[in-house]
Image 1: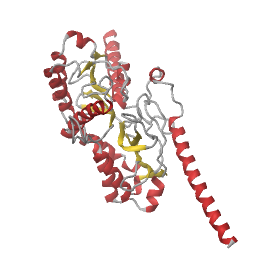
Image 2: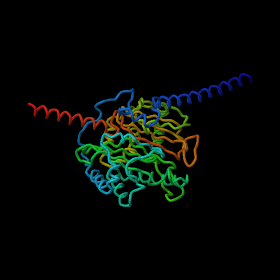
Image 3: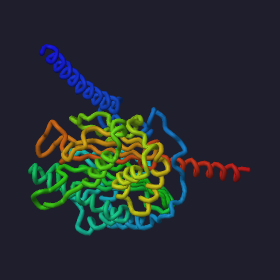
Image 4: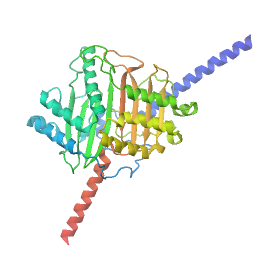
Length: 405
């Protein structure tokens, strides 16, 4: 009997050690990805833009200036219509230079003081023009998702009885540079749980960073009852994880413990180092590869159809250098986090702790954050912009030398 009890106690002890070890892994992962935090947004914006790296190195030669074959004329037209449709005073605080730090000054939280022209001050006609810019730039799915996130922010205002911090129209638009079919420019929408940065150079588009999320994710009452978001990103993610073999799931899983927020590449995290971790996807079966691409498409597919296909081809080109990682469980009601990371794409999906109208210590499926970034220096189209400037500077220098002879 004593031997049996000793064995049982040993088993319990080892089980507790396993739980403790898993918890330590989770904490180490959190600390590693958050290492080098900048003490607030203002401090991070003082740092020159570098971009998201792996192994603390920017990989060059991933992005090039070339025709995408997809016209951006509708986007240029829609941006000009919006600028022409707002007052001169509104335009003065809406338009910034293409190099302006305002690109990087976004925040997914509700209390941040935004710049630009707000939907809350727009006339009905101006709102139509603003949504016209989103419609020209996004797919039908992307436009609907954007509008639904805004509506659910209205639901949150109802639930929290706080219409100063939350609301359907508390979103702002800025234009960077002059809308053009040849010169670099872009636009940004900035608000609680919805940020889109949209850079344009010729017929090329870089749409990142993108932040999408909601709390709640489903309106069960109120003005927007029935509105629901982020279910495809959630369901496709867990479906892919379940499609992996037991060995592959073990490789992908950083920890089964999901007791905190895990997303790391959100606001003011333009220059973080994030090493590849989890399961390298170069040995996936054909069906598993298609499953992973289906997850990616739930994010990339928010762009206009033509430009989303251009981006998907870029992702596929680097599919053998892509990593998938997971935190949490895979049962029907489990909360989880997943990351898809390649040289040209970072996606994070995270079930977060509740913040409003009440707080929770544990993550919930009713509060979701997700982010899409372009690593290696091309968030905000920065690498394309750098190349454009270098090319034109080189041409200008050559012309000056020729004229001087």
